[in-house]
Image 1 (cartoon, rainbow, N blue to C red):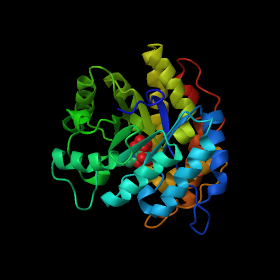
Image 2 (cartoon, rainbow, N blue to C red):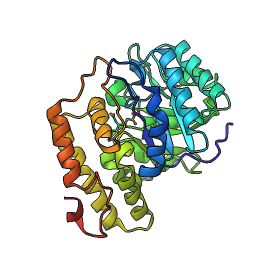
Image 3 (spheres, rainbow, N blue to C red):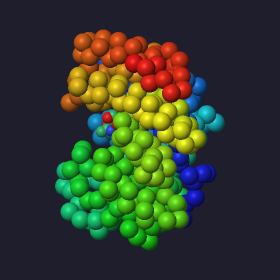
Image 4 (cartoon, helix red, strand yellow):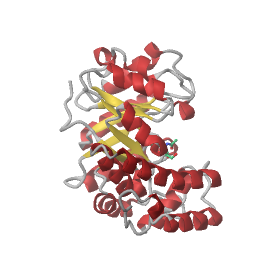
Length: 320
Ligand SMILES: CC(=O)N[C@@H]([C@@H](O)[C@H](O)[C@H](O)CO)[C@@H](O)CC(=O)C(=O)O
């Protein structure tokens, strides 16, 4: 069984793929992006080429180059770099998995194929197993995101006995709001051997209460510091403060969700907060509107999310 340096835990930023104005990948800012995550947001784990990274909208050659750049720039700065290698084609997924191993990534993750779909747990596991086997020394994570893949096989069902089939299986990225399913994943993880990473940032506190060992998400790119404060309050069992942080984060997410929120808008917000140009998204996504950007910036300012001043203990108003 593959053994990672240490269990993946804490916050994992689902990285954006920066692009130039003419739609090419902007590799030149990835080094600066790594430094920003580590120094400004206190986030030292990343999840590359996932949903936020538009992984499925990139060519295989682009995905390889993006993975390489993150691994290279993250060396001696980041704790873990997990590469999402899911694809509709098993062969492409295997190629990416093998490549991730060759470049020294710390783990790979795979979503369920979502066009011709696996119709039950065994078929899904067969697919995952074939990918994992091409990178036998790399920790393997299943990326559960049923709203986007349309594959509704419950995570707790998948987890049951999975290490017998996939010896490198190390955990789950759970991007769903079904806390019954998530709780049952935690419940069967008796020996705490798996990383159970929650993927719905606005509900992370509920995920922590249910037993999440960490979290992967888009907002940790720019709200990592704030979310880390929530994690620290939770660790100290200061649940009232942790809830204040969660509400504060929710106020922002709720605000942008009402305006229309997705990967394009994440790129725009990250550009505002970090000052690093993330560029436009790739078609079929459309660039965030000027109206969105102006409103989001005003909200970030009103919540004190641009200055990173932090909440004063117990004062909910501090971010309002
Ligand atoms: C559907 C979606 O994009 N979910 C995000 C969340 O971080 C999400 O942006 C956040 O909870 C706000 O709704 C992540 O789970 C996705 C993710 O980690 C990824 O980019 O692979």
